[in-house]
Image (tube, rainbow, N blue to C red):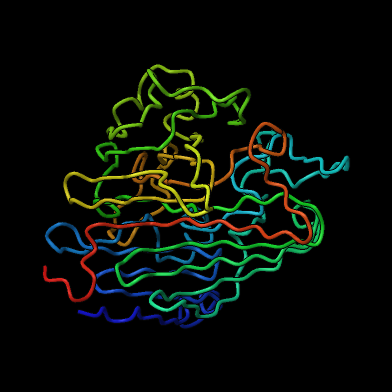
Length: 365
């Protein structure tokens, strides 16, 4: 039986006021619905069924513009020009020093205080046959937040008829620069507002991670995960080791670390990075990526500043971010995979989110 094509529509986030300048794009494939905002090229909501067919919204998010512009501004956003942290708020390229806009604590985080998450991106429909979605585009001028080179960036959200969501990034520059883009969605496979994710099972295709200092900057070589609370090489409850007396956990109060993924496929296609499972609902999320690293953040510092559509305020561990990216502070670590982009080159990165069960159109529940 042929699957019905993916449906794509869009409308203003709000009928008037500041929200009228932000578009909400909706992608539907059977029982799966995804919404994307032009503010921050944000993955705003994802709705999928559980093993019984009951649909829930799986991302931490808010419908309040005040929250979207405030404490929830990174929820689901595309962060850049450099995701994660750069030490000392400066980079050196070809012998030239470039001071960056600092975000505090001696680092530049997620591209600076006015990073890509704060920008309204232009949007247009895009498709490649069975898949359909939206392309978000942004021009970042030379010197934006201190980064050299004018950068033209696009992010494609493409939904397939089977409910598989692909996030595809492209960028070109006019001068040598560094680029590291990711999506900052927080997942709770039981449904947002349903409690914490400490009982979710997590598998990571990674045998090492990058330990960090008090600024959460990597300070040395990769460390093996074996025998530590960072070992998720087989399905392990997120909460199993999160409270252990380990020097890497006491500072951030949980996981906020980069795992070094096993080598990616030689043909440049996405390879598996993570599998997240909720034993109660039966929902799973498989993450595939072309990126060499995965930052796992368990919402350790959440204190109820954002309330979701469930009416529940988000506290610690209410979701988990699985951020596919290059390693933190790569510009200062020549031993890490390079994040340098030069004129004439194209930055390309793909992350795939496979939700199951998804019950595409034509599937009997």
